Amino acid sequence: MIESRQAPDELKSLLDRVQRNALIVGGVGLVLVIIGALVNLDQAFQSYLFSYLFWLGITLGCLVWLLIHGITGGRWGDASHSLLEASALLVVLMAALFIPLLFGLNRLYLWAQPAVVAVDALLQHKQLYLNVPFFIIRAIIYFVVWAGTIMLLTRWWRRLAQQPSLEIAERLRRFSGIGLALYGLTMTFAAIDWLMSLDPHWYSTIFGILVASGQVCAALAFIIAVVAYLGQLPPFSDLITERIIMDLGNLLLTTVIFWTYIAFVQFLIIWSANLPEEVIWYLDRLEGGWNWIPIVLIFIHVIIPFFMLLSSDLKRNPRRLAAVALMILVAELLNLFWMVAPVFSPQHFTVHWLDFVMPVFVGGVWTAAFVWRLRRQVATPPVEAVDGAG
Image (cartoon, rainbow, N blue to C red; front, top):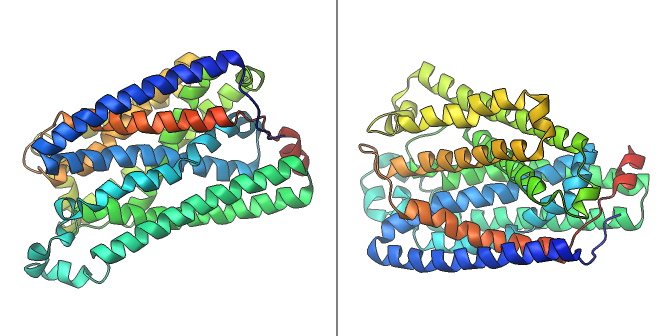
């Protein structure tokens, strides 16, 4: 059953230390971010955008895995349920952290600059959708849907834990299916709003799936890293078995393959069609020194993880599997940087010190909140209820 209880002393001590260090990192990062913003406000918003999207991706990706677990069941989800739930519940924090971006819309997006729109016929045509008030309204809708989904999903899990029955389990599955569909819909539009509209003349019908697959991959990589870190301590040591580690490794391999497929399909379709309004996105990212990033991504997001995750021995070893997971997390952060940064410097590769500080700052805040959620509720998953309902 899922039940809130006091964490064992050893785990509590470890979580206290992690949270304290995360707060220190976040505090130092905040000071550096303020200094950076005073020196170069445009760069601060650019660095904040991809950093924010990286940590939001882990949050929403964990929500997706909770929904998948609600549909399919499985001991991999039972063992990692508390970690997934603690991460997904941070969607409220991410809604608050989205607010600073609203003050930089006219510095990030051409469609938010009246002078640019006035001389661009295409932006004038898209203004019915790409305008600041509607952008904010849509963002509110996204966060309401995501927050409502995790709150209701958590409530259904609690009900199933308190009153195990086939009827409640079936309702949980149905709600999880609806939640997964809502995530797909809202994330597609969010990807268009927050990333695709950085290049308002460019479009891709598969872009939302690409962003969502990156979130799911990054979230699972994060959970695997945490499992390796906490898996030797109770209550996780009672739940994390070699079989669970193997299952998580197999799921990570699946997500890596799926992300690779979607990324390649988008590139193949756009490059084959060779339409000016489509290929410009890749041209800006394959010239001026930016071309080394996709080469690195091919290795650390595709080739190396793929062949390493084929090894059964590696997938039985939590620490070795965690090393692959951390590499994928770095790759996803680099991928988001590659999506955002070339918009503002398409001719020349450039990296600013805020590009390193900002992910650490947001990550410090996020990690401290994650540990707080996890410490409040160390859960024993509803293994019997889910399996019995199957």
